[in-house]
Length: 78
Image (cartoon, rainbow, N blue to C red; front, side):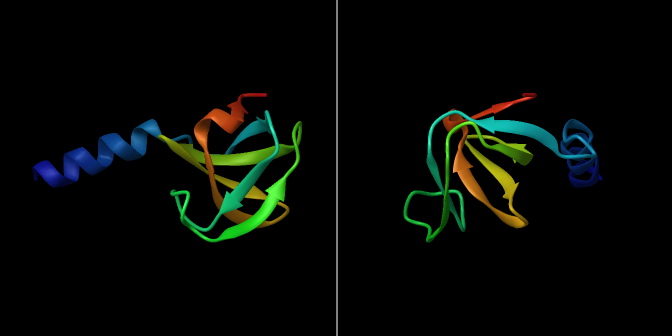
């Protein structure tokens, strides 16, 4: 079906393993991809994190915790 082929394309674009990213400026990691989401922890600048995926927001893993930061705060492939 068309839905299945669309889903396959989305999955193909995502890397199978997390990318490494570097935090550019201190940033608050949140429970969801919006500024109003609850804060989890503040991540200091120059910290390495695992980046699970990005659009406007990136889902990351930091110190074993999964959360979201805005894309402009992280450089992937670092």
